[in-house]
Length: 107
Image (tube, rainbow, N blue to C red; front, side):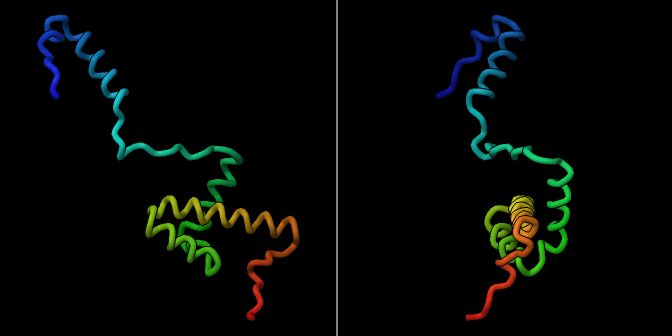
C-alpha cells in the first residue's frame, strides 16, 4: 500500500521533511534494534576488564565461555561477557581469599 505524496508536495518542503521524520521514528528497522549497554560502575574498571580479555580471552578458565558466546553473538559481546565473568572471579577471590572454581578436584 503506497501513499500518494502529491498532497504533501503542494504544502511545501517543511511538510515533507516533517512527514519523513515522523515515519522514520514510527517504524525503526528491526535489524538495528539493540539494547544499550549499561554504564554502571567505574569506567576505568570496565575498560580494564574488557582489555584484559581482549587478547588472550581470559586464559584457560574463561576462554571456553568466550568462544561459545563469540560463535553465537560475536566477538565484542563475547569480550564483555568474558570481562564480566573475570570480574566475578576477582570479586570471589577478594571476598573469600580463594577462587574455588579454579581448584576443582578430579572425581
